[in-house]
Image (cartoon, rainbow, N blue to C red; front, side, top):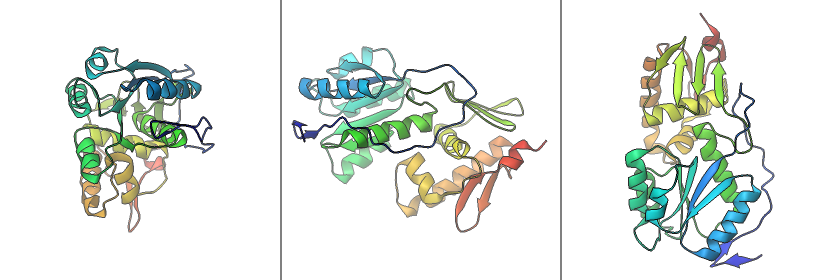
Length: 254
């Protein structure tokens, strides 16, 4: 298996089927990725691999160039940059945008992971990693933000509930619902597979990127807030002892 700087690279697709978000649009999308990586050999290999996955890729070799680039649909961010720490770049992205950011780094200790996620990263991938893992993680992040590579622009519509995943706009009965970031992400996960029961662990992993059961109360609190903002406490159904589901029949109710 070829390597670049101890970075596993292989071009095979994972072959895994991922759930798709229902779409009412027929506009084909090309997802843009900004790769922020100073190692030229690694960057060249990654750009080629990502382009074979049908992404449009722009590369920045340092933090300053990354912050001047046109805003992409997703950022792949190395932390060991020559001009500034990658976490500082992440902080500046978060000051102006909610663009999804996936950290790519050799800093694999738990404190580094937690710090990166708490500062606003959407996922954290430790080198070395396989391209199939990276592809799966990119697709998972894009699903949560309502985008799909090589797919269609996404408008999730479940009865009275409509989510414009490109504009991050949620409507119920034609009324716009203003949601915080995690509330929106939580609703997108539930609406992407309506009537599927998601456990608290599922939701913690998909929305908060953690599997620590001690944070399960966080899910309950956000579900309660989401129900209030949607104006229908029965739209998100509780399955006792299991988790939560978006109730399709309730979404269709007048």
